[in-house]
Amino acid sequence: MPTSSEIRAQARGILQGSWGRSAGHMLLLFIVLGVPLSLLNFIPVLGTIVSFLVSGAITYGLYNYYLDSVRGERPAFTSYFSGFNRFVDTFLLYLLMSIFIYLWTLLLIVPGIIAAIRYSQAYYILRDNPGISAMEAINRSKQMMIGHKWRFFVLGLSFIGWILLAIITFGIGLLWLYPYMLTSYACFYQDLKDRSASFS
Image 1 (cartoon, rainbow, N blue to C red):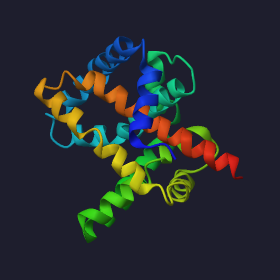
Image 2 (image 1 turned 180 degrees about the vertical axis):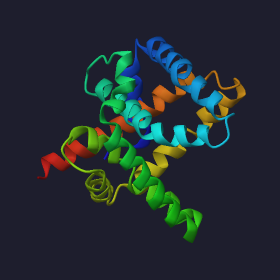
Image 3 (image 1 turned 135 degrees about the vertical axis):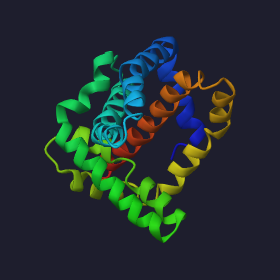
Image 4 (image 1 turned 120 degrees about the vertical axis):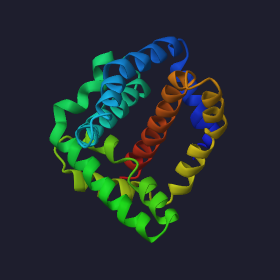
């Protein structure tokens, strides 16, 4: 099993030579989507509703873009918006995950974190299996993460230092950190998928 440092090293290798492009795409994505959504939040209720409705599609697009990168492709900026082509599926996935994580969090914070990790691969699974339902993607993610939840948690923790540095730069560093993190998480999924295929 690759360690967190090995996964991050793989991600850096994938991003080598395209850090500037990735940061530029992230900045453009913030301008195109982040700014309008931030402005909408000044409108009571409406902003919250719109943000909730599009969060699934945006998350799917982010995961799709970096999974393509991990698989040796050079995704176009428009890949970030691929979730809107599957708006209903991605919205239902976001809705169900939000409900389940919220219900687990009512017990305690830790069960909520565990639930979020358990469902963490659902967007990738939905992308790789267009015909399945949102609930099926969640169930497959739960199955895939058996024995790997701690590894995923440690991978997330390994970025804390980088997150603090990004905060020091008033958030500018996030333009490079987000691609690094999302590429690493896509590498984690691809490794799990490859291992599952080899044992099937």
